[in-house]
Figure (spheres, rainbow, N blue to C red):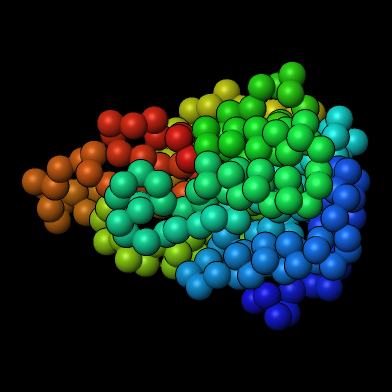
Length: 263
């Protein structure tokens, strides 16, 4: 899905959320900003973290909106959460591959300030986007919990769509050698399954069981591939894999927090 075939409602949705957050800029400026974001989400190489992912996250936020305190700010945070993206090999091995939440939060602060959103709202969006770096929400922060859960919701997709998601994520990191990718992905899934819970919001909790089923099935397959790789290259050194951001679950080298980059 590219910027030219983006659903027409997306621009209107951004304008509505920006106004709801207090933006004072005229509609044409709001539409220009929406167009810039749509172009960013349509960038080359985004086979998963693209417009389809953005619309999915916005839809999941809507599903959970009754649990939020400031739904329009959460929606704006969804718009910005992966606006800056880099899946290049250099970035991945430098532990900053995939959605760059810190740079995306800075972009949100810059653009929303320019649109006249009140400072408190701007800083709240910046905080929400930045929280996805670790992707561990405080259960008492309902807005953050909803954003994190919406971003992880793909884990609970039906099996065929989950399979397509795995294919798309691998395509995003096509420059990463398969052995490194498999080891990084294996570490991601292992860490996720060790979490007491994947979803924090009460409504998001309904996604817990299907997500764990998908992850368990993936881990089983990854284990088989990893065993084959280890048998073929018994002297391979673990811990040198790239940091990926495959669908907002983070993988990092063994010297870093494996969940540094959020799902």
